Length: 68
Image (tube, rainbow, N blue to C red; front, side, top):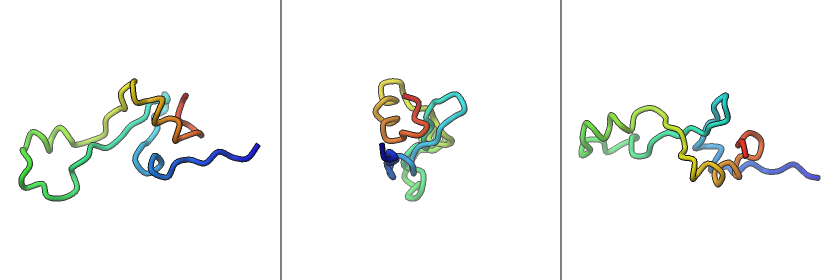
Protein backbone atom coordinates (compact mmCIF):
# COMPACT_ATOMS: atom_id res chain seq x y z
CA UNK A 1 0.00 0.00 0.00
CA UNK A 2 1.44 3.42 -0.93
CA UNK A 3 2.14 6.11 1.61
CA UNK A 4 -0.72 8.42 2.51
CA UNK A 5 -0.16 12.07 1.72
CA UNK A 6 -0.45 14.78 4.35
CA UNK A 7 -2.60 17.74 3.29
CA UNK A 8 -0.27 20.71 2.79
CA UNK A 9 -2.86 23.15 4.14
CA UNK A 10 -3.18 21.18 7.39
CA UNK A 11 0.57 20.73 7.68
CA UNK A 12 1.07 24.52 7.55
CA UNK A 13 -1.72 25.43 9.97
CA UNK A 14 -1.75 22.83 12.73
CA UNK A 15 0.72 21.39 15.26
CA UNK A 16 0.33 18.27 17.37
CA UNK A 17 0.81 18.14 21.12
CA UNK A 18 2.39 15.24 22.94
CA UNK A 19 -1.02 13.99 24.05
CA UNK A 20 -2.46 13.96 20.51
CA UNK A 21 -4.39 17.23 20.61
CA UNK A 22 -4.20 19.58 17.63
CA UNK A 23 -3.15 23.21 18.18
CA UNK A 24 -3.68 26.19 15.89
CA UNK A 25 -2.81 29.88 15.77
CA UNK A 26 -5.68 32.37 15.79
CA UNK A 27 -6.36 34.28 12.57
CA UNK A 28 -6.11 38.02 12.06
CA UNK A 29 -2.86 38.78 13.87
CA UNK A 30 -0.44 39.46 10.99
CA UNK A 31 -1.22 42.96 9.76
CA UNK A 32 -3.84 45.76 9.83
CA UNK A 33 -3.93 45.55 13.61
CA UNK A 34 -4.59 49.26 14.11
CA UNK A 35 -8.33 48.93 13.68
CA UNK A 36 -8.66 45.96 15.99
CA UNK A 37 -9.43 46.25 19.67
CA UNK A 38 -6.80 45.62 22.32
CA UNK A 39 -8.98 42.86 23.76
CA UNK A 40 -9.30 41.08 20.41
CA UNK A 41 -5.56 41.23 19.76
CA UNK A 42 -4.80 39.92 23.23
CA UNK A 43 -7.25 37.02 22.95
CA UNK A 44 -5.84 36.05 19.55
CA UNK A 45 -2.32 35.80 20.97
CA UNK A 46 -0.81 32.36 21.44
CA UNK A 47 -2.11 29.01 20.28
CA UNK A 48 -5.38 27.26 21.06
CA UNK A 49 -6.59 23.66 20.88
CA UNK A 50 -8.99 22.52 18.15
CA UNK A 51 -12.51 21.80 19.41
CA UNK A 52 -13.61 18.16 19.66
CA UNK A 53 -16.18 18.57 16.88
CA UNK A 54 -13.47 19.62 14.40
CA UNK A 55 -10.74 17.26 15.59
CA UNK A 56 -11.61 14.23 13.45
CA UNK A 57 -12.02 16.26 10.25
CA UNK A 58 -8.67 18.02 10.68
CA UNK A 59 -6.91 14.83 11.76
CA UNK A 60 -7.84 13.20 8.43
CA UNK A 61 -5.50 15.69 6.73
CA UNK A 62 -2.67 14.66 9.08
CA UNK A 63 -2.48 10.87 8.61
CA UNK A 64 0.87 10.50 10.40
CA UNK A 65 -0.04 11.97 13.75
CA UNK A 66 -3.58 13.32 13.56
CA UNK A 67 -4.68 11.00 16.33
CA UNK A 68 -7.82 9.50 14.82
